[in-house]
Image 1: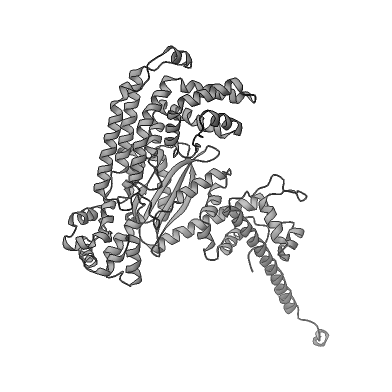
Image 2: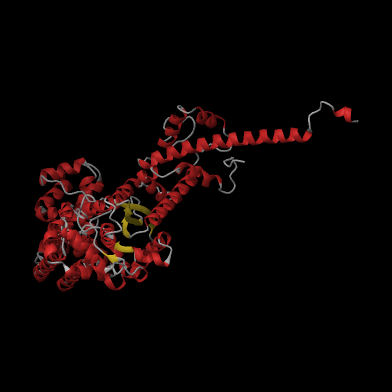
Length: 593
């Protein structure tokens, strides 16, 4: 019996060899699928980084214009034989479908957020939050959250997310921000690390008592509300627009002038003939250029009337142009519109002057207080002219008015008094906290010699009160040493001093100075300082103006705005593939055995 099996292969060994071969084939398939997916990820990253559309109008195999993404995939396959063969033979996982794109984008967004969380955790220092509500090209209200902190002595501003807002009230916005902060600062002891908060537009419409900053500060007691260089002071007027319906209507009509002339070169030709100067282009996401628009319309009222009358009589094109020109002409003959135009024509120059003053590199509280006083006095001076601001009623203006319920001059005066109060109140609340500006003067190298002779005790005291995490007595001793040493007087600004201390291995010796420097650098500045003032917020708004997609907005924004951060992220593609492989109901094989 034993001789009968002589020379035959052992069944157990045969099964084991077949099993090993099966594993090898499986792992080779996994390797190929992962390689293909990595190439697909690279194509998605490229399109998103340059804000190119992922979907084409016609993505069939014989399409001559399948879109940028598929075009890039087809170009890549010409350089990669593995990808080319896969796309020709794949029946389960091809990698180019909308479903796969959405899954990959969602994973990429989650991993990028996870990397930001880890970066904040690793720095273990201070954090500032910048938030804004803005409108995308689809006219959807979006709230954006940006995080500002230090990494290796360099300040960074990271895009966190968009949140589509149904309501723009303070509580809703505060809830969005709190949800973000609870992820990056999850522990109770972390709450003291949030040292600044910056908001814009409707975010602070309830003022000091119930605004976003007040709600957030209940959970984050050291999060001082500060004005940010990225938030232009024209927003005090937008604040008035958001609360007073008559003024909101005025600015809506005012925007119509620039919109009318940006739609057609033929219309611009009529404008150039009458005015000789083009109107500033209105920007949907911001009122930045309303001051120029107010001044232009005010100064060229007669020219614009002549232009619109010319269009109504001599236009040979579409009827829409004639209708819109007639509507804008009626605005220029309307007492209410002209009165509000006169009021804002008087207010706008003072806002522009104040904004220019706040761009000073060294902005101290005394100078800021003088600016505030001068601005409030200027607004009050304009306020005193309100009773005489509306033009007298004439037969021409009466006949030109649109049929509507008349608003008495007393009511219109009350409205402008209310607008004046809102402008002053909003401005004062925006600059209520200015101790960080005083603290910044402690590191003004031009004053070190003076501070060495007479220590700035009052500034130090206010700094310690604003930031209780500092040891006041130790900070005083460290500052005294810095003021007395000549080598520190060559440092120009807080960033330069921080780098000098870190490079000289003096972080332990000057621990409190280092801590205060980190707080000040992390705090968004009121003026533009190149090393500390690059605006992620501006990049976000540029992205919104160029992007229609809503369902993938967060992921596409992250890949576009934070492309450098993602490019430098360790093993980003591999981590995306790993998470993709563990999604449920994955038919293609991506996991090794």
